[in-house]
Length: 85
Image 1 (tube, rainbow, N blue to C red):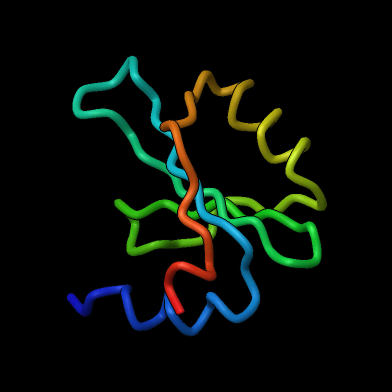
Image 2 (cartoon, rainbow, N blue to C red; image 1 turned 180 degrees about the horizontal axis):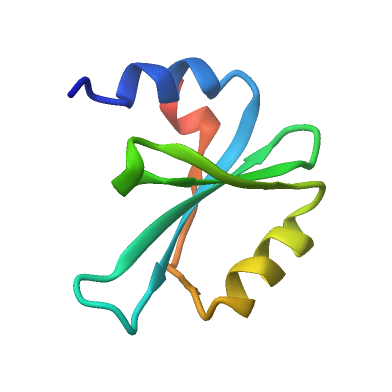
């Protein structure tokens, strides 16, 4: 499997930040990536499913509400796109 790192660097041109969210009930924990774009939209990807798009939301608030409904917890911190470039 190819590393997603080059793709992330390319997508850094459109995204603003990336957060990791986990489902702490499962072991090992299920991990999802929330990517906030510069236009305010947010996409959620599953690293365990070859970074497949799970869902897209029009705002950060609706994306986090969706994650919190499913009892995901945010890992502290964000990776900023400007740090990848």
